[in-house]
Length: 321
Image (cartoon, rainbow, N blue to C red):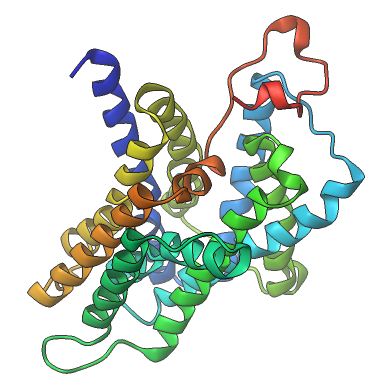
């Protein structure tokens, strides 16, 4: 393995692992008395200017076409809904289980493409769906016969579905021509409005009262967002989109690791088998179809423009290599 590929795998692993850190920073905030709406309000609020700086550093502008505004509002609300339902699920089940169930979103993307856009169902995709359902069944019912919270499971499935619709939406609409870092900036900006309404326009917002809690909020904005984005970009440049997407399997593994090591969540053989089945299912989906295009496009950043092009409209085809 040459040095470039080695670096690519390292960057891909860091990207996936950092994206799986949501529970590590969110659960202490819950313990301190904050609710999902307040946590996500501050997460989005902090992440937006960071992404704005990234846009400017890359020499891009913030201009939008009129036809892009409504789709961006819809995509922003989908992203916010996905975040909200996932973070709410942490109140009903172990964070590691929730993050693993969320990872079925590539399977949902495949199903949307089959039934919504008439993409051919391959044998690998069929096997993947079967494995994913088996993994979900194992996670849903524990070894002692107890089942997961139906509310928590429904919340995670809603999060996964919202995320899948978002991924397909940004690739099947006028937004496919919007540079991804700018797309993410506006998705978070419009998504923030959902949390602003849910905290009664600030009246019921719970503000962190200790410095280290602000560190958790900052970490939520930086690790699953900025670091994940930047490392994903480097990984794609070094090893390509398919290996990078497959390395995304480390996302739920990271969440499970922190759940067990930090929060004392129980890792049973049944749970471990369910996690393995879901990860294998997602790898089958990515390897056996064109879903990898949808899996990485929404997280991929773009090369910095040369100085003589920084003030031009950069949402053209040549800028999205």
